[in-house]
Length: 327
Image (cartoon, rainbow, N blue to C red):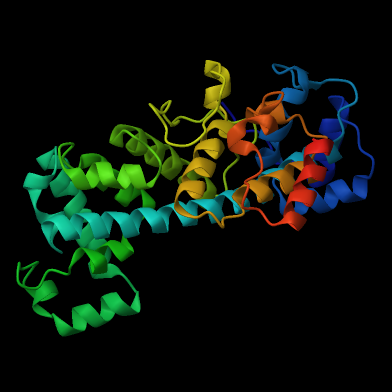
């Protein structure tokens, strides 16, 4: 079977027009298709088709609407990445502090503190390789002061403490490490409690979902209308307000659910975070988009978790009140 022939940008526009897509400004479309591939945009117009098999569009579908979806998606990834940064740094800090206080600086090497020894061995090896190859100044300096660590393999008297080596760990590394820590250890429960969750398995589930989301963002992949393979568990006895309604299975697969879990964690670890406000501003800017494709249900903004914090300054309360009225 022969591959499809490559189409020029003008041919791409002609094909879309033939299938029923409308254009307000074809010069704009040319500019967009020069910087965003046709195939990449395809996922953003998929639900605009009345006949997905023959790729025939619904009436009234404009190319500019597709670009608006794409730009929203790009802006959302940036907002989410900032929130993930807050969660990742807090997790790293708490993991290092509570486990090191209870079990010493080399706790991450003690297989007896973990549920699955095989997983622990794999996690440890990956962590050691990352540290050995890290270009961070502190990692280079540590390797300079402990040359035998690399030349003769990892030796117990030269292993870096957790507060050193875990600084090179990714959110995925930290998430897997936390999940594998022995369930009976008080430090594991304390970390979950600091994040506002009563059960450590809830935090492990949430972190796994957020790490998955981070990988999507890091690869500049689409969030718009995406079904999330990993999603947070429904929290058992949350310490702070959570969603008051049970989401349908379809809604729970959409990004809104993970976004709400991220808001919960951000509020638990940093009361000065602006994640809530950033989401509202973004949705106000793109208020014409069908946000149900992202899992935002009618009245979501009135859920207690999404309502205004009492500690917001008055000027911000006024701005947010205005946003509420427009959503």
